[in-house]
Length: 222
Image (cartoon, rainbow, N blue to C red; front, side, top):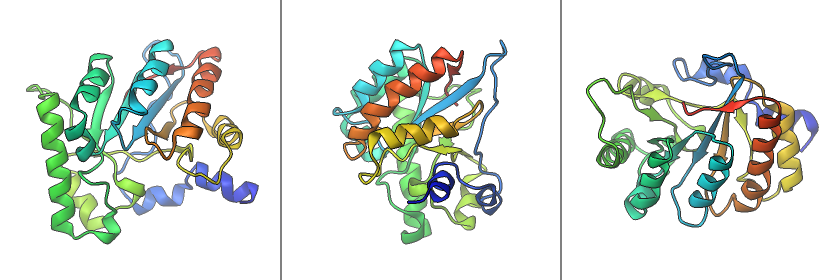
């Protein structure tokens, strides 16, 4: 893939923002103390092969992150999800079965979102003043009717930097190079705590943490 094409995939063009009005792509560039911020997010877990390792890496930098969880994995591994919560991370909705909105009927898709949210509530019961839950569509695919149906009850979170750790055709060093060259304050980065992403995730994540921590960044949950 050419350099321009790779850069556009790593940082989605702003045209996509207009195609999903109301979805969120970035977050505040600095915290209350003025320190620059990045927002690390992890899709598809929790799984025992990867998520505990991710939690260890984050703890080394006192980093907080947001985990967009697949409901099936929450049901199988609730203890890992509880460990993420105990460490101060946020859990969010990534549907029940990780199905594409472009290939799933509306009723089935929304039912999967609702079931995943039920599992999240059982793990972390919301208080009376709890913020709106977060949702991210698998593959970044969503339709306008589904977005309208979800928006009253969820903040729909997309991303501004796709690390592409899921791509087995991308060398770990190139995955890191693209991420470091693209990310800046206020960006929402997507990693995947999945077996498929593991070779790139385990190379890139500790180096991203070390690089931006050395520049004075903090890592915040959404």
